[in-house]
Amino acid sequence: MEHSDAKLEQPDFAAVKDLANFLRIDRTAVPGIMTTMGVPRRGAGYPWVRIWVALGIGLETVKDIEELKTPLLELKQVAAKLGESAKTSRRRSEGEHRDKSLPAHIDLGPRKRLFFPAEIEAWRLGEPVRFERRQENLSFVPARKKNNSALGKTRSEPQSRKPSLPSGMTTMFMAPPKPG
Image 1 (spheres, rainbow, N blue to C red):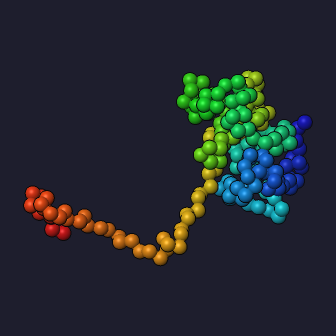
Image 2 (image 1 turned 90 degrees about the horizontal axis):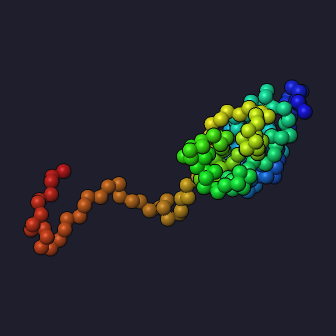
Image 3 (image 1 turned 120 degrees about the vertical axis):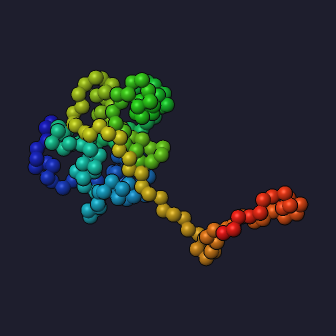
């Protein structure tokens, strides 16, 4: 089923619940990931078109818009589809395996690597993908907030400390400290 330009121009928004399912993350992490991706919230959701563009999809090449809404696959799911270990799939996706042809992945954290199901299936069957996407590994790891405790705010640490001089008999055998 081919898309029309009118279908892409029609606003289609993803609710937080839908994005949590699509990205396989907790609902509370969705706003942070969307901010990192540069996708603004519009009313009750996030525009799918902006999400797909951030993920490198060439919208003019998409034949089935609904296929793009299929939840992404985690590394363990990809490994199960390919009949190999997760370690082998990870090494393939990082280019450390002798077969470096696995489609590009999306990193959402240090332990969250996702793949488009259509790309994995096309790769597995040796068929062309039904849409084009920039084949580069994308990373959308949100910045962590610094945890400043109340103790850390009120306590002042000295800027620099001079090493303390040893005491006792050892000082007799050491070179005198340099001035300055």
